[in-house]
Structure formats: C-alpha cells, structure tokens
Length: 272
Image (cartoon, rainbow, N blue to C red; front, side):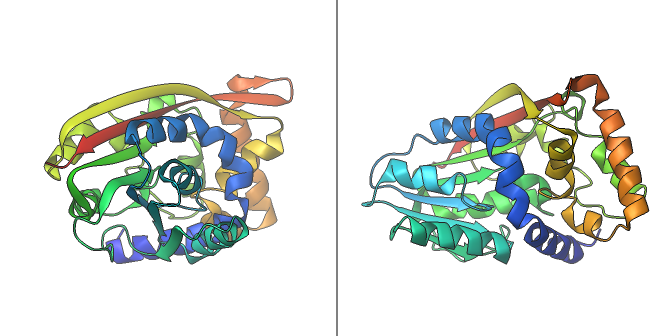
C-alpha cells in the first residue's frame, strides 16, 4: 500500500475504533504495558514522550511516575483517540499531561527535549518504522531511553487468523507486516539502526481472555485495526466473518470463555 494511503487508513481506522478500544483491550494489553513502564525506568520530574498513545493507557501511568513536576506528551495519528485522552486528562485535572495529533514519522517536538520515549503497540501500523525510531531518537536527550512494545511472532498469537479472514473480503492491507517486528531479533536491529545502544529485549507469553464470543469478536473487529474495514461490511458478510473467526479460536474456548494465546516483545534502547 502507498505509505500516504496507509497513514490515512490508520488515522480513520483508529478514529473508528476509539470508542471501543479501552473496553476490549485495557485488560488484554496490561502485561505488555506494565513491562514497558518498568523498562522505561521513569523518575520524578522527567519529561516523557508517548508516541502512538491511543487513549492514554500508558500515558497516564507514566504521568503518575514522573509526578506533577514532570511533563508527559502523548501523540497519536487518530484525532478521536486524542480527544478521548484529553477529556480524561481534564477529568483528572492533570496540567502536566498534554495530547497532540502527530504522525509518528514526523514528530513536531524539539530535539533532545525528553528523558524517555515510549511506544505501546503502535509501531506495527507505521509505514516507515525506521523513521519513527529515528524521530524518537531525535527527541531524546543523551542518555535517554526508548521503550517499545509490539506483538510477538505470528505463530504465538492465536488471534492472527483475523487478518486473512478480513483481507479475503476487502483489500484492507491494514498492516501487511504486522508480526515482523516481533520476529527474532528484528526489534533489536531496528533500534540499533536508529542509533540506540545497549538494547534489551523481553518476550512475554500471555493469554487474551474473553468472557463471551461477542467480546472476542468486538476486540478484533470493533476495537482494533480492522474497525474501518468491518464498518463497511454488510450483515451477511459480518456473519461470515464472525463464524470464521470464532472457528479459528475454537481450540482456545473453555465453555463460553476464550483464552487465546498471545506474545508481546518489549525492547529498550538508550541514546548515547
């Protein structure tokens, strides 16, 4: 897909998913996000950049760690995600947290203005991941940390069949190389290519737990990357997609619940 078109698909796709995102994904992403925050080693008073922040599920815990003497900026390509995060920041009266719509490949931030740059499960959707890492590197002061989480290897993610199921009905090409970053040493190489040193990787095996078929479907079709494509399906097509996806995760069903295996990779690198 043309990179410009891919960015548009991502922007409007995540706009579509914004209202459902936390409902379906808050608990599921906790293992990766908790490890990301641990590896970020945030300290009171630090300045933090959270790229691909979504609704702020990492941004707000980061803000707690740096305290009101620190500063946290969350950026995302989706305006709808940014608006939800801004409303939550206002509700919490957090004056040291701001949110701006930005492309991860062209961050409108100063050079060397941050102690840590984070990205929680957004890199898979960016056309030029190398450029996104270089932008994070540029934004960091010397000694600053970049920490990013991505999905792991495809064979370890039991929900992966949703991609060919949807692509058989529409040329979504939402993320043609979705699992590439989580394969082997790819994240290490990408960080090192962008100028980071002392790179450490951590793999996390977990399960995505859903208490009903509707919750399992909602996560992948309404609250995630497929939301835009799914919104264009008529009812018969939706019924077909539902049936095929539930069949693909049937081995992981326990009664009405599902425990779908998944893997995350979390990586940290430092700027010299």
